[in-house]
Amino acid sequence: MNETVLPYDMVIIGSGAGGGTVAKELSPLCARGAKIALLEWGGFFKKEQNTRDEIGMAEKYYFDQGGFQTTSQDMTLAFARSVGGTTSVYTGTSLTMPEEVLNRWNVPGLTMNDLKPRFEKYIRENNVHLHPPEEINENNFLFVEGCRKLGWHVEQFPVNTRACRGLGTCNLGCAVHAKQGTAAVQIPTAQKNGVEVIPFCRVERMEGNDVIAQIIPPQFGQDPSSLKPGSYRFRADQIILSAGVIHSPTLLFRSGLGDRLPALGRYFTCQPALMLAGEHPRPIQNSEGHPKSFYCDEFYHSQHFLLETCMYFPFTFAKSLSGFGEELDDLMNHFHHLQMILVLVMDEAESHNRVRIDRKGNPLVDYRFSQRSKQAFVSAMKASARILFSAGCRRVHAPASDRFLIHREEEAQIDELISLKYFKLGKIAISAAHLMGGCRMGEDPRTSVTDSWGRVHGQKNLYVADASLFPAACEINPYLTIMALADRVAEGVRLSS
Image 1 (tube, helix red, strand yellow):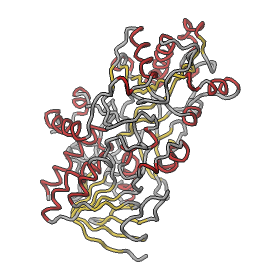
Image 2 (image 1 turned 120 degrees about the horizontal axis):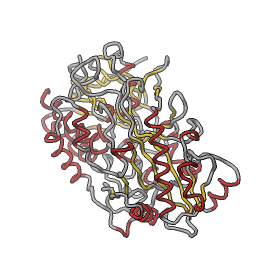
Image 3 (image 1 turned 120 degrees about the vertical axis):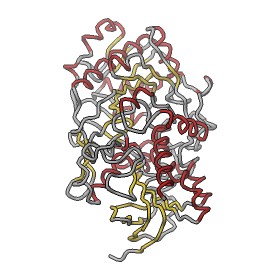
Image 4 (image 1 turned 135 degrees about the vertical axis):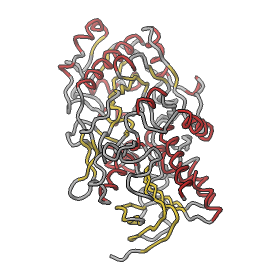
């Protein structure tokens, strides 16, 4: 197959929180003559292309329409392909990683004194702030009311939006581009400074200093790449891999580095999540206004879970329920009466949870739920049900229950009705929020993939800059942490150039 060889000084693979940040931080080098390319599998979505149609937008933004499953088929993973990556399809939550978590990571040379100014920089750049009350929907305030009645701690999420109109379909791409992710902030700056953004570029592997890729035809009415469809070999002095937790390890495996890096793909972690819903006697404002504005960390240390407000539209909501039949139909008919809560469990980084590839080089994810995680889910569902009833719901759907709906008069029986014996993997719809790990940082090549600056062990010109660097979960939304680490990786690349 004929390949076109294109020379560059630096090639960045992936344009999400990691790749977009690296591109922007390296872009001043273009003024000194450096040639930098940012390769992205997907395309750039214009405002009018974000139609808010659930099924259609899931197909356009996500790999496998957001339905990629673990090999055991008991957890679904959603990760995006677009300019901006997953920063284009989340709710904008922007939290600074707790220092206690960084200390548990125990990566030599990686300190909060180093990361703090980087966090602060992206908080400023991406307009992280608290939404005023008038921009937040009633679903959120009912959560706050329920938590406070129970005496539980609740906090508001800072978010990275600008001129948010409260459309609610944040996870399907913003129809007004209110989210200040890398597609809105870092990548335009990088382009202005001279970085060449190449969409619809599907990278297959690396060979030494070469990135082997295919330029594919444009999709979904998006603008095509500046390069003609075909095979390309991007030759670069420095390669920064920011393809995400699933595809960064996959590309390293395809490039023949699995035998040299025994930890590659291992210690995959996430925040396994599921949803509860409660029905109020009256309609509530749930589909307009920012959908995810508050969280409860009352049980974060003691029982390893967080509770968040959430709001999903009918298709996503229905597929998250455990059950079928008349009761489900009746609940869906009361959609505008529904309050929703998202449960996130803090899992542990374990070697057997990993990203690997099949014989054709496609990614696979092995994940086994620990007993601790299962118990955390059950405890979280009990707490969520109590919040929903305290907020005024007349009935609640909890997946690990012996019935589809728990009614208000059964509230005193929550501990019996929601139980580990009803927690059935495969029956309960569990999604993986916040994918992390697989190219973990560390000193020892036997137990890590990169050093503390993101340089792949044994490779002079190859770096990783995305959430796969995390040695373990950061236990919050990882967006700002990815950017801070990517900023640090970019600094290392500059110093070595």
